[in-house]
Amino acid sequence: MKLIQMGLIGIYVCLLDISYVYFISPEYAYMGFIYRQHPSAVMIVISMFFIILPAIFIKKDLDKPSELVFWILYFIVYIPVVWVPNYLFSLKPDYIYTNVLLFFCLLIIGNVNRLPAMKVNPPSINIGLLKVIFVITLFIFFLYIFKVSGGISLKPPINSEDIYDKRLTFRTKLTPLAGYIIQWLAKVCNPFIVTIGLCKKKYTYVFIGLALQYLLYTVNGLKSTLLSTGLLIVVFIAFRKKGRNFSILFCVSLCLLLGISIILDVILGQAYLSNLFARRMIVTPGLLTTYYVDFFSTHPKALLSYSIFEKFIDPVYDKSPPYIIGTEYFGRPEMAANANMFADAFANFGYIGFLIYTVILAAILWLYDSLTQNEKWQGVGIILFVVPAWCLADTALTTTFVTGGMVFTFVIMYLMLGSDSQKGDNR
Image 1: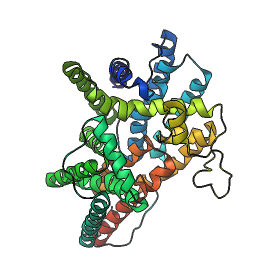
Image 2: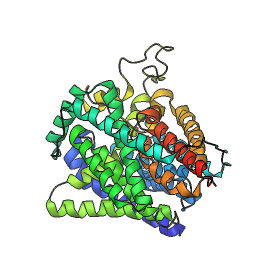
Image 3: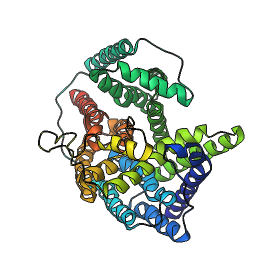
């Protein structure tokens, strides 16, 4: 099975290569998706060595949420980070160091499942009361978002101009509270409804959750609102056999997604699907990480002086790293080029930041693994963690805690365990 797994990973890289060279770069080179060269044979061999290496050491089955995080970071962050620099630069020592350290960081994350579970004893909670509180909270959140945004719009933004107009319009009306609420709706509340529907075979819930995500997309124009839910469904399909051969099924799903996108884009003579799936969901983390490493290797580290350490450290820059990268590499000072947790770690602390952030994440995953030991809610706990895991591939670790919904995912699982303890069936 390992040979099959490695073969599928090779196909996945080939499909990413086709998407980038023939669809993404020709269409989006002005956005930084540059194709300066085709990688040499030496670069291909070195890159494929690093790409395949983590998969050799981690089991292909999925039993705990920490393993899910490993595979999402592996396919959506690690592989693009290793491969995309080949299009931009000749072989550079900095990127070899990056690959080596990321490999060890992934090994740490992939082996969190070996830690003994912490004993969790939540207070007894009435599940009926939880349902009422959740529905009321959901209703209040949506009312507030619709009030701030100016009402409900059932027409989705389709082309790039419509999408960016919708985002700009929403941002001009956005309040700090609305910014948090819309993220919690998109990354916790609505995915929770979809997750319960999928895991408990209540497909009306799935429809409701997807419809609510669609409503949010018509308000904010953020494609991640839809993509994250799509990824959740893909993970659920790969997890259907109780996690057996998950990595193989997950890779097959991603390959089908990329392959179908390429075929349809060829037939239709455009790059819409490759842009939506390959560029936005997979290639972008690799591209941005490359730019973060390139810039902050030769400039002072940010040291979180724009964030949690701003009261203790004088600002290193007059803006946060995403806006620095947006200015330096995309020529757009208003652009926040948010990247993944590893890019943010490097921007703040360099290579040692990789290890610091990884150890913090490992501790968090150990706690969440402990919360999902109950067989009744284990599947729900794993699928519900898809969106926070994807946030790690799309934004900073510190942002994922609150804005990305990770804290609230913990709270939900803790309360679910409490509802079982009332019945006395917490195993």
